Amino acid sequence: MTSTAARPVNALAVAERAALADLMAQVGPDAPTLSGDWTTRDLAAHLIVRATRPDAAAGILLPPLAGWNARVMAAVARRDWAALLAEVRQGPPRWSPQSLAVLDSETNTVEYFVHHEDVRRATEPWEPRTLDDEDLAVLWARGVRLATHLLRRCPVGVVAAPTDGPAAGSERTLRPGESRVVLAGPVGEIVLALYGRPTKGLELKGLDADAEAFRAFPR
Image (cartoon, rainbow, N blue to C red):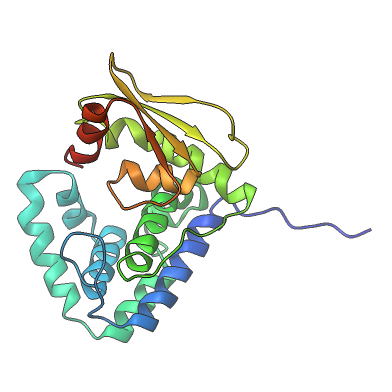
C-alpha cells in the first residue's frame, strides 16, 4: 500500500513564487508591471525587501517609514539581476517567520499571486489562468481574510460571489454597506479586483455609481 504525501500548506505560495521568478527571468529586468510604475527589477527589489528587511518593509504600510523603504528598495534594485532573481526564488530566509510554511501561506500566497499576474497582465495578450480546486480554496480563504484591510477605504459595500472552486455558488460579504456591488466571477479575478487590477470574466453588479466608486477607490 502506498501513501501520498500531504500537500504542503504553503504549496500555492511556493508555486506562485517560482512561476513569478521564471517569468521575470523570461521578460528581463526592464519589463513593465501593473504595480504602478515599477519594472520587474523594482518588483523583485520590493519582494526581497519585504522578505528580508523588516525594518524597511514596515514602510509599505506605515507612511512615516515610506522614505526609508524607498531608499532600501532602490539600493537592492541596483544589485545584479541574476542575483535578484535567485533571492526572489529562494523565498523568505530561514531566520524570517515567513519561512514557516503556515506563515508563508498566510502572508505570501496572495502577494505572489497578484504580483505574478502584475507581470503576466502588463503585456497583451493575456488570459486568466485556470487553478485547481485546492489552489482556489487557498486563494479564496486568504483573499477573504485580506479583504477587510484591502477595502477599508471603499465607499460602498462589497459582496463576492465566486463561480469556481469549492466556494462556487456562495456569496460572502467582504464589506458591509447600504449600497453595494457584487463581484461575480472566478476567485482569482475577484482577488485581483480587490487590488484594483484588470480582470476578465468578472461581472460587477450594482448601480453604475457604486460600481465606479468601487473601481476608483484608492487601494
